[in-house]
Structure formats: C-alpha cells, structure tokens
Length: 525
Image (cartoon, rainbow, N blue to C red):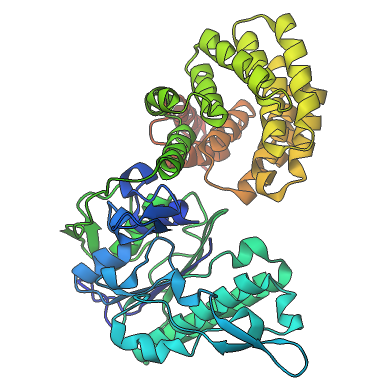
C-alpha cells in the first residue's frame, strides 16, 4: 500500500485530461501563462536550426509532477503538452512525440496500407530504460479498423490509445504516487463514441490506481470547458466542479501530499483531505531562451495579451500591445485587441481611431465597424453609432465571436430583440454556449423577465461554473427578490472566484446584515 508523503493518507492520485499547451501548462503549474512561460505551441531549437514543440526549456514555473518528484513523491506525466523532450525532466515522463505517426508503410495484398517500421522518437521516454517496454504499446492510425475510426479521427484516436497504453503500463509496472495523463484532442475532436471511450479509459485508470488493500484512489478529471472531479478518499464529491481555478487545482493536488509550494497562487479547495502542510520550494526551471523568430514572438505576445484581457487587466494588455504595434504596425488582430483595451479603459477616442483604421484595412470583416460603433456608443452618440453597428452585423454573418460582442452592445443600447438574435447565432456553436446563455440571461433580465433570466444564467453556469460576474448577477437578483439565503450563496461563490470584487463584497455584507436582522426579529418557537 502506497502512502502519500508527509500526511499518512492512504491512496494515490491520477489525473486524466484532454487538449492545448498554454491552458494545460497553467493546469499543471498553477500559474498563468505570463508566469509559466508556455505561451506558444513551438519554440526555437537550442541550436537555432528551426523550431520544435514547446518543451522543458520554455517552462519558467515547475509543473506539479516535478515539484512532487523533488519532494520525494514518485510521479508520472504521460502525453502532457509542453513536455518534450521527456529526458529533460526528473519525474517519469512520456512526451507527446511518443505517439508521433511518422512511420514506414507498405501495401498489403488487398491494397490496404500496413505498418512496416515505426521507430520511437528520440528522448521521448524518461527514464530511457523504459523505452523498450513502451515501444510496442503504441497504436498507429493505420492499425485502426473502420468501426473504431467512427469514434474520432484516426490520428486523434491512435494518439489517445497510445498514451493510455503507456500510462496503464507505467501505473501497473513502476512505483508511483501521482500520475497525470493527457489524452490529446480526443473529447474535442470526437462525439459520443469518443466520450464513451474516454470514460472507459478513466475507469481503467481508476481500477489500476486502487491500492492492494482495497482502498480507493483519487482521480481528478479536467476538461478544457471546466474542471471536474470523480471523488476519492482525498476529495469531497464535486469539489472541483464548483468554481475551482487552475491555480486551486494545482494547490489542492500538492496539498493532497502534504505540500504547499512557496510561490503558490492558488488556494486549497474546501473538502480536500490533507494533513498539516509543509512548504517546499519549486524546482528551478530553465532560463528563458532568446533568439526566437518573429512568428513565435508574435504568437507568445498574442497569448499573453489574451490572458491579460481575460483576467480584466486591460492596462497590462495595453502595455504589451503598444510597443508591439510599432514592431507589427499592419497586424490587424493586435490592433483590434488594442482597440478593445482602449474601450474597456474608457478611452473611446483612441478606440474609435483604431476602429476607423480597421474598417479600411478589413473592409469585409465586422471588427472595424463594431469597434467604431462601440466607441461612439461609449461617447454617448448613439445615433452616430447605429450605422456602424448595423454594418458590423451585416459583415458578421455566422461568426459566433462577433455575435457575442454585438449582443452585448445591443443589450447596453436596450435593443433586446436584436440582442437575442445575436445570442442565438452564437448559441449554434457549442464552444460559445456558456457565453451565449449568459447573454440571453442578461437580455431577459433587462426585459423584466426575472424567471427567464435566472434560467438562462443558471444554464450558462451549468456549462462553465467559473463565472464570477454571473454569480454576482444572480446574487443581485436573489437579494432583490428577498431570497437572502440564495443571495448569500451566490455572492460567496462570486467572491471565492474573484476575491477583489468590491461590489459583491459590499452587497454580501448588506444581505448578511439583513439575514441577521430577520433572524433576531423572528420569535423563538
């Protein structure tokens, strides 16, 4: 029976995930892209001879498996983005190149492609002594039958199956206490069949991870649309469903082993079973490399700006974008991002100037007219804004991102029929469902349809629970209806997800005072 370090808690931990290097580096390290450094899918090779997949030399913050290994917890990472080359790490690592599909094929007697030779990528397994054992566990796309390919694209399916085979072998055959497994784009690229396969893979991991004495393991399942958990002895049921951030996940995983990283950004989630924590230093990572070519620098910049904007730090995003526009004056995507920052910072004149430039540079796209119209609206000239917004709507077509922005502007202008039309366009695209439901909820509330608004906001939270603004809005709604217990719960969630929300904190104090006053005024039974 394995014991978790420093806490005497029985069990092991396995984490199964799917899809994208920047997001998954945040999940693994517990810090944002500006800190962990994996801001692009590629990096320059150390010898300057081209590019390679982002790997060890791009990390500036250690992922959990490396922190655990340094603290004496035997750890495994399989298929995780940003881990090439595997031999650069101290923990047991199988990097994504393990399932690379470059192989020699020949044609069989029926004219079907058949695998002839499939060398294993260099340095993709650590320790190297495991290469021979893992080599023949891989599944190549040509080895799949037609029925299997119906679940997901062949390369996606073969990648996931190969990573699963490596993970299960390592879990069964090597000492370990923590395992992180990444199944690539399986869920994102597949349908119901892929989801059923993913469930079966997770069930198999859980079965293998159980201890010899019958005690259960923990297994955390993380998806790009939100955080989920299948509870084990160390986690209360559903604790990660309800508002966890990637930083909280990393901190909670470390706490499960009695550890707290000295530079940790996250909090240990309520319901996590852990003993007294000891603080450990994260292992030192590689110094950030120089000499990247312009496309890599541009990609990293775009991801850093998007991350700052998503967190609401438009001043930081502007500080990144201003010098970038000198370097890339004709980059319209960066220009639109800068225009958005000016808009959110209240500089409508600067936003309008960029909007006019984009309208000329991108005559067939909605972003210039949209930014111009939004800036005029912000400046109070709604009549002048209207033709620009109508032109943006004409150019937007079925673009869900444009539809979401146009819907938000229409709600602000009180044009609620138009707003709902835009949000229904966005709702056709599954990746925008949470934002579209949230927008529909705000439109219904603006109509005075409180029940319909609440229904849509709750539907949005059912897709993406980490949405502090929506919890805050529900708190406002519940407080206005005298549903004080519900208001307290919603506002507490909003503050847990966004501790700096002063308006939510003020309203929570007012609602709590109202609850206390009501309680005191109620006669004893």
